[in-house]
Length: 431
Image 1 (tube, rainbow, N blue to C red):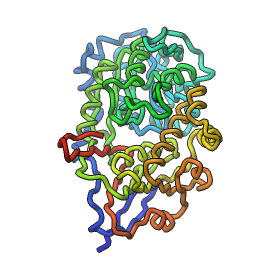
Image 2: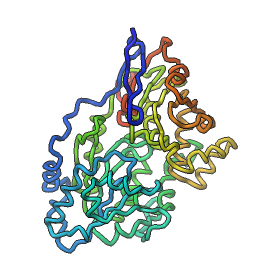
Image 3: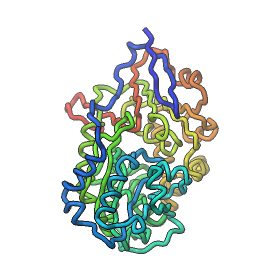
Image 4: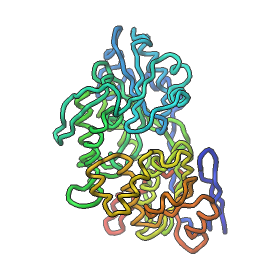
């Protein structure tokens, strides 16, 4: 018996007819009560922060404040909670003229004016100075070197002013979780600092990813621990991070100390968005969750990496990602040349970039399972990666073998749900 599964794709949906008896599990986040009154919750957490003095004791008239925010590729819902924060600053005597919003682009492109307005909301965009960080051209200052040797050079606006970090806590392939300290590195740091930190993503002893990094991995993760050391040199004044539910509303806000408040949010997200699976499947069908999660292949790979945790070795991942901005990073497909020439690993170690590592990790995923990508990208561009690209749903279903007798796991929000495999031998749940 067939059942129609509607999965998000860009701004719309795709309908996939699947044999109901073949679908062994649909990975949904646990039932979560999202916030009904975000402004009230903001005021509560400002007055009762985690491991920090109350907000009113940290800011006063005459302060110069920098609010670091995520770029358009992150689903943060900043416009729902930042107005209450700015209102509190105003009531404490900090004028709009003393507030700068700094967009933590990392190595991403600058934002359009329309995107800036969408990030902040119309009123705050009109009232506040909003600047893009540029990892190559912004005015920078050196704040020191981490124990692992990363030379930390950051935007001057996070050094000479009081700093509020905003962002979203989500599982992350390399850093374990997004949000928190990532607003500083890679968010507002120099390209060299980003490269030196992110080089920890590669195994120092073998041509592969570092086995200590991974989705949800914090303890012992050298990339994360170095990021923390980088952020400690800046020592932001305050943090507010959101956890956005798959239905597009805020599930939780955490506020307080830039590290410990964020860590509490990570623990909560891991508990709520990790989904146990009893067995891996022959086929995993995963949607990124629509726009902006599937704005580009660069962003959409989060879904690929999560889906890879649920597929059997040699199985198939069918990934649904519109990718209206193509690769999402100009250099992304440029890494195909060293890949074809058999020098991808040494070239990445020599000239490390974040898009280069995401490319590298996607190639690793495609070596472990067949990857079929339904997107608007020319299939020729992903072929060198070992990914089979298609541009129609009909071709996607055929290429993935939909209709054959096989176990299927469906992931409607692949970037936000983390498969946790329960080992039959130990009974323990892990990634």
